Image (cartoon, rainbow, N blue to C red):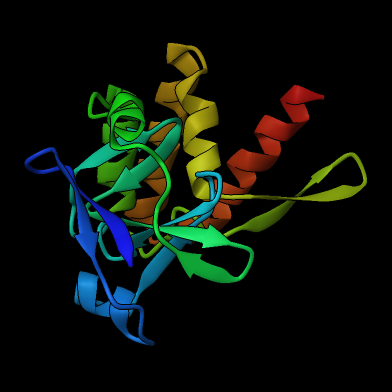
Length: 181
């Protein structure tokens, strides 16, 4: 099966042939902690969940924040298949220029065991809404400089006191939702 491998270190994007087995993705990353991201239509993006703590390079695929190497596999319902995205289209949506806020936040978050993509619930009115740490970073990145500084300063305090980072991220998500109403 044809898949696509992304290596942000050398900015290499290449088509690779893989044989899908129970351990294929784990073998690719040499890790059992894998994130599965479904933001690319008809494809799955796999990344190493340890990439944040290992301080690997961040980059964007469209507006999706990725860290470290990625493996893209085509998806049709529950079935995995060859990738169908043209290589030129993929190259056009990859951006290695990551804003300072992201870099600062990721450097701090690397000191914790948080997962960028694991969903948690906040309230939008009375309805629960599933968000992630990655969404919180995106939201605060588009805020003004004072709000960004507040986010980073408070995150540093959470780390310094040994408080729960995930709880802090959920609190920031709820604050962002409250402002959006």
